[in-house]
Every structure is written in structure tokens, then in C-alpha cells.
Image (cartoon, rainbow, N blue to C red):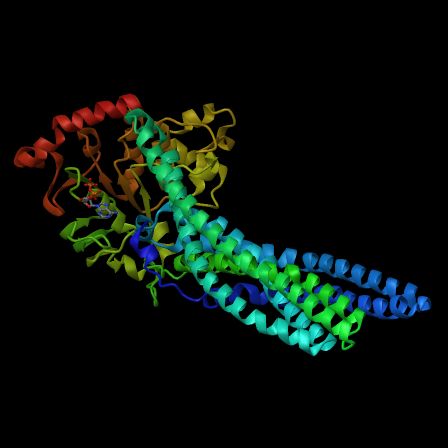
Length: 598
Ligand code: ADP
């Protein structure tokens, strides 16, 4: 469990539920209508004991049979009313409650898209998944059912005690008095339950993370034979969750027991005191029967309170978990007063004394990096693993913001541009080409949503991907990604390239675009890249001499500092570190591996 997730202090259930207000408010008419229907239905049920008393004291005690049919019809009418109103409640709340769930989910997803990469580095994916699914389910259930019945059942209990008081003040008072300690006990148990509810939801989120990670990394886990170890972790996590669930059940069982005691002991008291009253003539038989019927009618509302309170706790914990994510303010946003994007973009890219430290990191990864790319220039970035190449490429498109210095495009700080403008100027292709579960067309058009088929094909041609895409069973419409056809590493990478070049961005940032290509395709993509790179400014992370040779100049990064800038041959001649890097056995081995994998 990540620390920051548990540091939330335990707040009262009601306080947490209040944060549902912005979502509930637009539907309050329907929800209040549903609540009123449920209340009216309960009250209709509560009227039946009153008719029962009239039947006992009239037709039975005094043989007044003429009114009997009317009284029986009355019971039937109240019963039908109760059922009809229940039906109405369900119809009234179904739409708003599902709409609330859907809107909250949409907002959460949109928010996750706005949050920067740094947020996603910190938050386990399973926690986000469980918040977007089961937690919102819990909230819907509360809005549609348990929340309404919590209110309605309390009101029904109050009304029931009112009816008892009206039937017989003594009986009513006795019931009211024995209810007090039970209420106190119930609230104490509820507090403990709400802590357990929060823990169980967090544990479910952790469990989802393990499942998700193992599904994504299944090849690695299998090939390394790590399945068993992960299974052990999963089983441990699952047992932890089970323990919490058992604790919840124990608390809920105690709540039920306490709550069932109230109506049961009340019925005993009513029978005892009532029989004495009837015997001594202070109470009619009808009143006694009426009072017992009221208590049996109240049995369900009273007993269910504990369970409904537990549901409220679950919903409160779910609401809190939801807002923990929503309350994170996106750190990378549009500037308050954006500078208009340069038009046309010349494509001069300057890193001015850029330093960078990861959020929560203890040391700078980049130190005072100065680098100037002329418009149209291709600069290769070479450096040992861990020297900060990937980090540097992430700063141009503002996946992270620099912590010192500035990144400038045509003299404008990228932080002064609208994000939408920046992302049409700069396109980034990552070393790990991620495909979404959608058609080839949609995957490529991610870079330019309004792209026509011609534009998609053109981008595919540039990335030398048109050949294999044309050979796919449904061409551009073939589904790829996790739910579709599997593509080779080289094919994926060429699609990622096509995605980057489709908008014809003036600045391209490519994190080793050729790493997963075999020698043959590498040559093809290189030729294509050479065409693309002709017109744009490009920063290209490169591991192999062949990629480096695409570049006009090379920058050598050593431990987060620019150690040298020059042409490939200059650096080869002058820099032993550079020579070593471009011919290190490590790199060659890596190349071989990639070629086999492609
Ligand atoms: P390269 O691409 O040259 O291999 P990276 O930019 O990936 O290097 O990494 C540079 C340094 O930053 C490494 O020491 C790495 O451990 C660290 N680093 C990379 N990503 C993160 C992250 N998300 N959080 C904290 N540190 C990171």
C-alpha cells in the first residue's frame, strides 16, 4: 500500500458523503421524489396495524360485522399502495443513480487524462481501476437504495414510535427508552466498520494492481519463472483482503444482533405490559394487537439500519477514495496568459540551462543542460543507460516540467504555450510503442484525430508501415492492441512513428525509434526517416551508429550533463567516451537481442 493513500485522516461518514452533492444536486427532484415514495410506502404499511386494531376492537370484540368488509378492503388498499409506491421509487431513482455513476466516472477519466505523467508514476494503476469501477458501483447503490432507505427507515421508526405513543403512551415510552442504548452501541460499531470498509477498498485496489501488472508483464514473468513468486504475493494480498472482509462481517453480525434485540425485546415488553393492561381494563385488546403489529412491522426498518449504516460507510469510503484522485491538481496545465504560438513555426529548439529532478527524487537527473537545435536540424542524443536521455526528451513536450532553466521553441518558453498548441508543434514517439485496443486507423490518428485516410496512409508510408498494414486482414480497420492482432516489436514501433509524424509537426522528439527494428526494416525506416527529418527539427535518442548517421550533429550526455556536441566523425575522432559508447559490446548485444525480437 502506497503511503500517501493511507495518510488520509478518518473523517466522519456524513462529511465524506457530502462531497457527492455536486453530482446528486442536478437529480435532487427525482431522488427526493423517490425518497418520498419510499416513505409514503412505509407509512401506508404502518397504517395497517391501525386498521387491525379497529378490526379487533370492532367486528371481533363487539361483533360489528357490517364494517368488516370495509376494514378488510382498507388493509388491502394500504397493502396495494405500499407495493405501488415501492415500484414508483425504483422507477424514479434508476435513471438518476446510473447517470450519477456514469458522470462521476467520465469526470474521473477526464481528470486522469489531465494529470501529468508524474501522477501516474506515483499511483498504482489498480488503485485507479478500482476507484473507477467498484467504488463508483458502491456509490450508485448508496444513492439509489441504501441512502434513501437509511433516511426512510429512520423516519419510519420515528413514525412507528409515534403510532405506539398514540396507541398507548406507556408502551410508546418504554420502547423509546430501550432504544437509546441500542442507538449508542450501533453508532460505535458503525465507526469501527467504516475504518474496515476503507481498508478493504484499499486492499481491493492493491489486488487489482497485482493482477494488472502480472497481465501486462505476463511474458516477462513467465520467461523468468516468476509466476510462483507473484502468485505468493497475490495470495498474501488476497488473504489480507479476506481478513478485512471477515472483520467487516463480524462487526456487521454484532450490529444485526444488537438491532434485532430491539424489536424482539420490545415485543416481549409490549406483550407483558399489554396483557397486564388488558387484564386490568386499562388497555383494549385491539390496542395490544395493534401495538404488536406495529412492532413486527418495524422489525425490518430497525434491523436493517445496521446494514444500511454499513453501506453508508462503504459509500463514504468510496467517495473519499474518489475525491482523493479528483483533488489532485494537475501540475502541468495551460498558462494563465498563454503566448500565441509562433506562426509559422521555424522550429528552433533551445534547452537553456535545463535541470530536472523527478518529483520526490533526491538528486537532479539533468544538470544545466544547454543545447540549441537550429530549425530543420536533426540532433542525435547519445549517452550511457541512465544518463538522462529519456528524461530529456520528456521535457520538450511537457510530459514533465523542467525544475530549472527553460525549454524554448522559437524563443518561446514551452510553459507559456497552450498545451494544445505545444502538442501540435511537438510530437514525441517513445521507445516503448504503446498501442491502444482499436483499429490501425485510430491508433495512427491519435496524433491527429481529424486525419483523413490519405493522411493516415501517408504517415504509414513515411514510417514504412504501409506494406504490412496493407497486408493485414482488414487493412486500416484491423483491430490491434491488447484486444486485437498481435504485432511484432518492429511493426509496433513503425506505427508509433506514423502516429508521431501524421500531424506534420515542426519538432519531432524520437526516443530511439529504431531500437526494435531488424536490419532490413531499419534500413527502410531510415530511408523514410531521412525524408521526414529533412523538413523538421528533430531530437533523436540514438544507440546505434546507423541512427546517429541520420543526424546533422550529435550531443553526448554523460550523467545528466552535455559533455560534447559535434558531428559524428568529430566526436568519434575526439571523444574516447563517445567511441566507447557507440562500439560497446553491451550495445551490440542489445542490438542482437532486438533483432531477434523484432
Ligand atoms: P536514459 O534514457 O539515458 O537511460 P533516463 O532518463 O531513463 O536515462 O533516466 C535517468 C535517471 O533518472 C536514472 O537514474 C533513472 O533511474 C531516473 N529516473 C527515470 N525515470 C524516473 C522516474 N519516473 N522517477 C524517478 N527517477 C527516474
